[in-house]
Amino acid sequence: MKLSHIHVQRLDDDACPGRFKRLAHLQRIKRVYWTGSVAVLDLPCIAVFAPRSISSACLLKAYGMLDAMAEAPVTFAGGWHSATERDILERLLGKGARVIFAAARGIEHCNPPRDLGEHVSGERVLIFSRWGPRVSRPIRENALKRNAAVVALSDAVFVPHAVPGTQTFKTACTAVRGGKPVATVADAANEALVAAGTAARDSGSIGAWLATVTSKGDSADG
Image 1: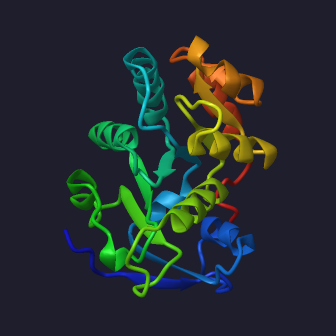
Image 2: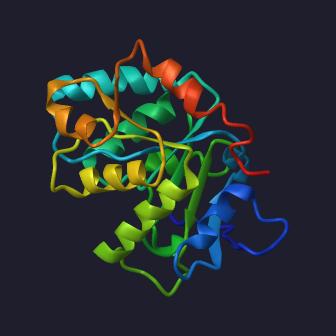
């Protein structure tokens, strides 16, 4: 699906959405490119990062937690790159959730999941990139910068599973050090994540965690 109606937003513009302005502190970001609905930026935002490899038991627990969070007025953000993340994205869209898709290249060159593309013209999906049309390849360096932008946009982070040494684990640790609340699945496989400062939750307790991290005033920064 070829994306169209792409807008260019300068971050120093007074009319720039407050959540986008959070990206201004990142190196060399002066503008973002977007299509879809910026209205999703007005809601509390939860970043989602998940590895390619995750046990079925842990994933099922994560689904239960995501289903519970999807009932709240929040937006989920991510790069939605790994197979696990794509499965989560499909599930969230099926639940009617609002979603932000962050690209690691110019939007013109993106090929978003079909289910996502079908919602771009509505009020539930925003696709954005810090790169313009000259950047056509999603290189690793850009993927890392994309993930940093997703964390910066978000109020909290959900990482279903990650093992030390992986990029997902490093992203979770960076978010913790930056003061972002980070939750993971309460599972023995996530002991390292918990030791690193993430909160272990389940489908019964994730709602209270979500209420706490999204009740800090105007999450969209005006």
